[in-house]
Amino acid sequence: MSDNKECDYNAELDKYIEHLKKCEYIQDDRAVKTLCEKAIELLTKEENIIYLNAPITVRKKHNMKYNI
Image (tube, rainbow, N blue to C red; front, side, top):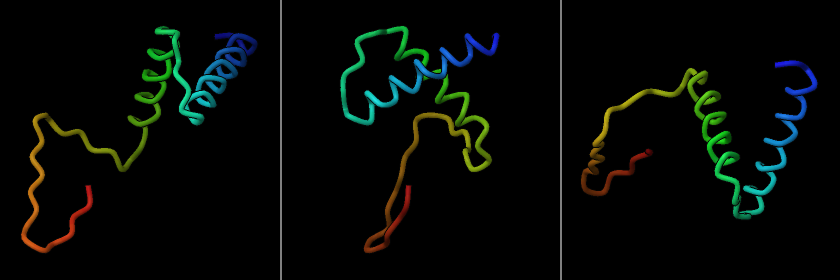
């Protein structure tokens, strides 16, 4: 992707992220898909992310706190 197209792409993503921060609805299906793809791309690079297979069952012992 050329620098100009990359800049436009990032500006468009930033615009949609600002909409989400304001809890505004995004009507463009393509934009929602792009945001999801970018989120997946960023999260897969995180070292503290683990992959689990569904279904996941979380159990709590009586009077014990847990973090999810």
